[in-house]
Image 1 (cartoon, rainbow, N blue to C red):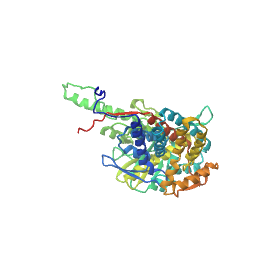
Image 2 (cartoon, rainbow, N blue to C red):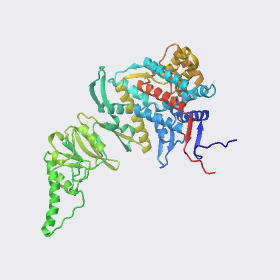
Image 3 (cartoon, one colour):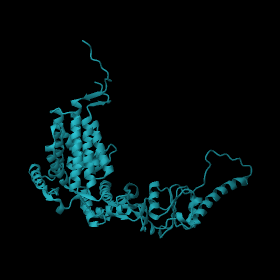
Image 4 (cartoon, one colour):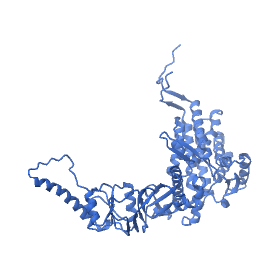
Length: 535
């Protein structure tokens, strides 16, 4: 008898076939179970200690999964889901994970016991996906973006499940005004819908300062920097300043490579020092020629330059971050200049109302505020401690993302699990019309969709079986706006309860969940190159 041929490295672990599929599904379910309690207004918080000893307190699905260190490859791909969702639409990170985990769990029996080929299951899932997106379109309704009341209600629905829901009124105002400031109208698209560019990442800066109260937070119509003027005698309060932005150092230009100078006369030495001073003086004179009140540069400013600019009545900030400088340029209508020689009148920013330096806590902050038409802004967050501020910032990011999505595609779906329930019912009806084995996995997606309302009921401490059947009955009669009141765990009408979510979020979460389920079902062999511990 022939000895078995070992063709793979012995210190690699390999699971294949049925075993690999089972392990993938179990891993995905495990990740979903971690996050399950973080859904809805009655969500629990998770407390995570990272290796550096930092503390994260949050119930934001994405923030939790970002901190968790996972070894299993399938679980790793689940973490990617919430990241995609966070980058794409900003909210619904928890929903995605729970959905994907549930779809896999529902498909497992067909795959393992009934031995259906994964490809057939995937075909059914893809069919279910396109039908589900249709249903979401049917239950959605358009919204008026300019109506502040409606918008606030919408943002409240997103914040309601988060830690900041105590101050939801304040947070809605912050998110709405910040997004409105950075919104740039690009005219209309070919279809005639308004076209906006809203870049939150680049132009909305969240500045967190511990101390004060959460309600003291506000949106500045301008920019705030953690800087002080470079010379104590410079003025710290200027009304309607003329601001020059530079991207070059205001100091003596040294030779690129090593420069050796041989001096024979002692006057020459003095002349060399004099030339250095003259060069700096020339730079400062070129700047002062256009009479600025504030000069902001990304590089250093030498003591001599400070002296000349101070005599010219300028306040100077140095070593400002590139991203901050871009933001300032956008706010005050200035152009960032790379060479002092090229300064011209049109480069000066004049749209700023007031330049002031204030002491908050024990640090100096520079404000460029009351700008006329700001296209960027700073959100100033105050709060009790660093952890609270970090959590508020994460929630605010979600709120701004929701606002942005609605502005870009103004259409809403009912929240509170109503959309998912509607999809579930419609898919269950469709499944009966399918022929062959495809209807089982198709039905599995319908069952998996119920996991969102079910989890909401569980987290509110309700009775899942009884409340779900009530909800199902209501939907069967055609009331597709019926959902779960996440506080009491009862069935309510979302129109009265006022929880609506952007349609984009619903679509994206179903797309991401089903596609990742397809991906994980396709895997039938896992080779991990991790060396086994020496026995």
